[in-house]
Each structure stands twice: as structure tokens, then as C-alpha cells.
View 1: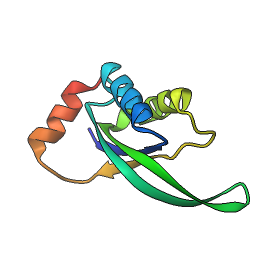
View 2: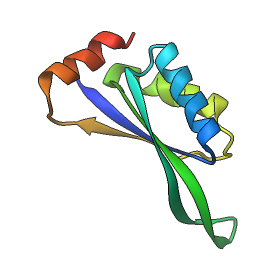
View 3: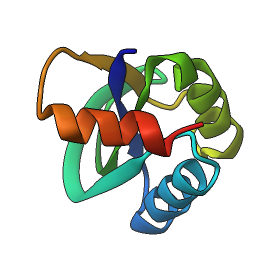
Length: 104
């Protein structure tokens, strides 16, 4: 069973914590890490934007990725949130087993 790292950007620490807590408490992710105070430069609505954002990194199993994405989209404040899934190719097997055990 494969595991995935989900990369999510949000507009505030409060939103990052709310999303992380929701994903973990609903067992859609085994854990979520939050990285605060990043700069995001992107094209939106016809012009370059330069904003502060927060990253949420969630770990889950591949079979839950679609449900996790749907959950994040339902509670995220952005019109078009960044939610991408990256397969975890290798790592500490005990940690990867823990991810699989702690998710639905």
C-alpha cells in the first residue's frame, strides 16, 4: 500500500491548524506539519501576486488522497487552493507503516 505526501498552501496559521486538525481527527492523514511565513509569488486574475502563505504537509495513504482533497477543498478559504499529492517512494519503513496504521 502506497503512501503520499500532500502539499497544501493556505493564507494563515489559523487556517493551517484548522485544516491539519480536521485531516488528522478524521483519520484522513496520520499527521500534518505546518511551515509558517513563506512567500508565494504567483499569477492570479491578470497580475502577479506576492503574498505570505503557510504550508501544510499531510501524510496519508494513497487510497485516501481523493477524499482528503475533497475535504480540504470543502473547508479551504481559497477559490482555487493548491493541493497536490506526491508519492512517497521510499523512507523509514516503520514511519511509513505508522502512516498506514493511523489512517482509515
